Length: 455
Picture 1 (cartoon, rainbow, N blue to C red):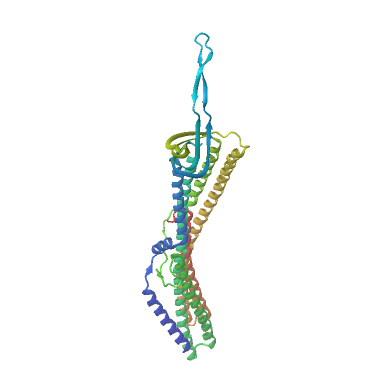
Picture 2: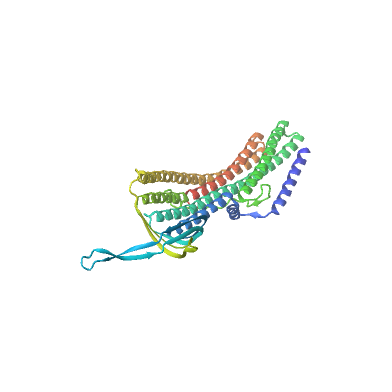
């Protein structure tokens, strides 16, 4: 009686849960992906990195254009003084018309000169414009590196997005698997309940021994524990999906009861990794290392620049008159040629070349690893497809075996242990089928990521 009451409560609870779930909005895999890409913090960080790289490239681009600067300086000083030249008669010399020699012809009176000066308030201001004409390729190399950095940021954003999609898909199908596993546990529990009622009734009529009742009771207890584990796994899988799509962990969500479809006639390839973001990032790193060599080499080349300015100067009083109070234009041409720096700049170039070779070796190593990863993903996908087909076949056979065993048990041709074992085999085959479909989709998206096709 107690057992039947517990079963009834379990059924009612399941019905209530079903009604609650039906009231929830069902989320598709596409919706979960969109929510994950929108709320994922790694995606937000990658987006900020892309924006920072874009702004940095604009900053380096500005180096091609003139640089305008306004400046001003002010000074106040109490310094002053005077300078005087004594007056008097100054001799006047004229050349002799015959000999050509200078001869004194008289005197001229010089009244003298007194200069009183003071610094007072002095200020100057002006506008300057600077334009580099030739910098040894430094500006161009730096700008190209900034563009490469922006492209790498875009590729990193794609890489992050593919990782988010992969994890979201795994969490989604994990929830589908948990729902399917709960269905398996419920169906197995229903089978055992029906068997328990039949065996108990037969025992009450003296047709079955008490031992058979106890055997079914033990299996029924195990089934109740499996139901509890399935409920916990379902709740945990839902919380895990909520974590990836930006929902509160305790939010109630519902998804489809079916695993996402997998293309049946896919064309796998194990030789092309060029679509992967990692492959593009490695190529950009090579290009950036090449530009670094050019950037360091520019330190060995001449530099030519031109500067023009308009400046206004006001100040310095002499005899209570301002000496300077007007503006002027100036043009400067600067040529700088490096001569000798004890190998400092040359060694920088050599170091950049070594770094370039190192980056190329790292690229080759990473490409080989990606090819191995793609091959492994292809093999896993092929094995998962075969396992899925075999699990479907095994479930049909186990279900037929359970029916035959049940009929033979009813007529006394098989023992209860044989029938219970047939039920366990059916349960295990059902679980294997669910897990095979789960692994098939997981391996499918893993292959798409390894091939650079997960978008």
